[in-house]
Length: 294
Image 1 (spheres, rainbow, N blue to C red):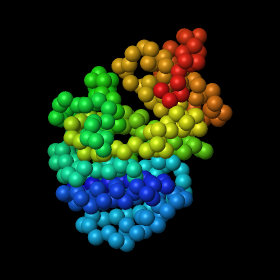
Image 2 (image 1 turned 120 degrees about the vertical axis):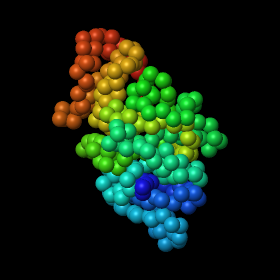
Image 3 (image 1 turned 90 degrees about the vertical axis):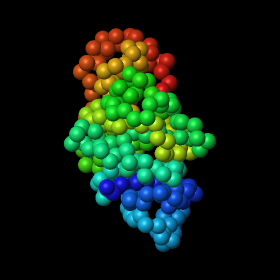
């Protein structure tokens, strides 16, 4: 059961080796490391070349180089190129705990999309060991995305491991001239169509950078309104959601779509949400109050 650990990288020469070294410490080496260099302009290509030249651990390394198009495009390339049965993303500024691969493979031993379970969702932790977002008080449960995120109210980034064949059916949208879309809607759609095995295993260490995508999400939405509108429309597909949050998302969607000149690239609202547009005066009022990074 080969696992593809996928790392999209852009100008992270100073941090990439730490991610690599965490892979070299794994107690289970049945994986490949697939790196897509998304058009880096710093010393990242040289760092990658040195790592490949020095590499002696049992796992294979494969490198693909592309023109800069954003993380979501790099992920689409990685999913296409992956050789593993399972696919997980390790960002270039983060790293795995030493038994992460062993835990993934153990948890996935009896998981199959054919049985309606598309993969595993485990915990991310900060370097000090604290859980990113909401702690989980159960060991393992098979749930849909909405049960986990909305009904149970669990927030925060998670470490997803998804069957590669499933990932290939849920590509990230690529909007012309834009280089950012949020990942959450893809995990949401997979977790709606399939169950996922949610666990309390801390396998992934997040070291959020001041210049990372998470820190810059508000600015990125401003620069990428088609992707932002897509993310809002997808979030509104969830059934269980407080009315005020739903209205807020509609207001944000209206804000982004007002900046899109080519209507072919406007992601429409779900049908059951469109009735909120009759409350246009309320939406417009909330629109003036909504922070762009909310």
